[in-house]
Length: 254
Image (cartoon, helix red, strand yellow):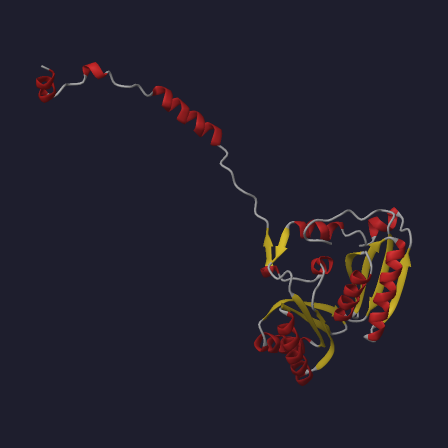
């Protein structure tokens, strides 16, 4: 998913899936998958109870590397649930399951985010009050913006912030303390340099989206030009011989 233009995903490309039980963990996993091999991130599938799956497409060799690296990262987080690779998904699978990225690609081509090209910070809590308190603490502790929040079930809520790397790190640390004070901190993640595919799949509040506006042209432009041309043809120059001549000019002529 590339906001600057999409290359079509080949129909014969392999499919890779890694599942975790945390939204920040799946975003960090997807980031590693994208940076370890030449794959495309189609998006995430969230089925409730905190289960989130990252879906990537690409050549079978690249997908194998991406899934292996992503699973290793998820295991380090202690959040790996399962992983699998589908070498040649059939068209029926493409049509029914959210694995082609066509809808998300269409939506992204018609909009632009004002928070693009900034570091990403994710803080997940169990319980909404803890997330709101953590988000407030993050906004007040550094120059960051709250981009959106995500709910994945099992009481898990994630606040997503954007800003410079240093500001995001400071903000996430402040949010962690506040989340622990109010309720339960579940997971955190900082992505210093998100790739375009990752950018396109992150949740974003509507206030940050800039829709492309069509340029309005006057519909009667040709008619106006015709009217002006008609006016030019109707203009007649006066007969100079009929103009009155001042007496001074007549005296000079004599």
